[in-house]
Length: 84
Image (cartoon, rainbow, N blue to C red; front, side, top):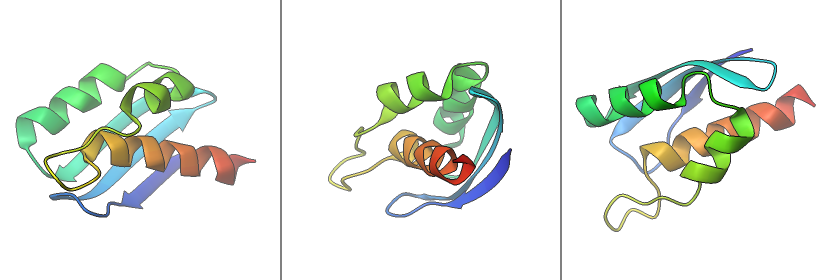
């Protein structure tokens, strides 16, 4: 499954995600802190979706109340709902 998720409350503009079954295949975060977003994408590749959600949910960036990792967790949660 592929999805482009429009982020809210972060420097990044969107997250492009590809999953297969219950596993993250690839992530590309557009905008944001380039090195950090590439690092997040590399770390979650091959991880179980539920593990990514558990590890990244609720992380914040400064006083924003969210972060790029938190937005990724939200996007994956949304994908799971859409998949049924």
